[in-house]
Length: 170
Image 1 (cartoon, one colour):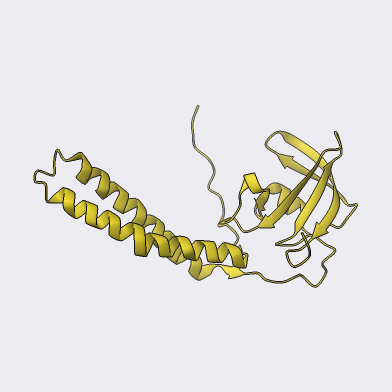
Image 2 (spheres, rainbow, N blue to C red):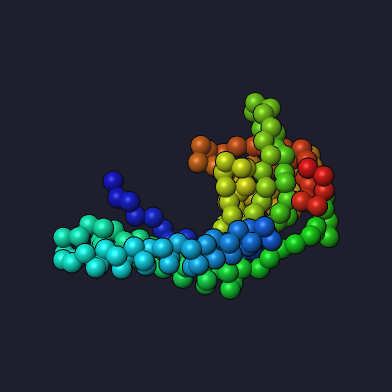
């Protein structure tokens, strides 16, 4: 079975202020703390002599490459991201940054999701990317609207129960 997948389009360049701060903090941590530590360890491993059979040297070299790749990615990504702050003009509708409570029309279970940028999505916290099928189906919807989203488990119907934004009481 082939592992080929169709190329996806570019991800949406939106982010919340908190998400931008987290990415900046990660970049700062990598550049000012982790990279100097790895460079120092790499230099110490290189000083041990024969590099061809030095596992520590090979490991540190690989680790440095991974850090440098992430630093390059974060630097480029932070340049293009647009921070979305505040409430939209119509806070009764679902837009970027909204907390949306949905009720599954089949079993009545409720779940709350937050629509965020692709760089800050976190399924464990209920934060879904604006590029996700569920978020796309929700955009512009209001309380009591029904939606159908095609999820990995198949098509599911939801009813919007509540919409709120960050500056409201949680």
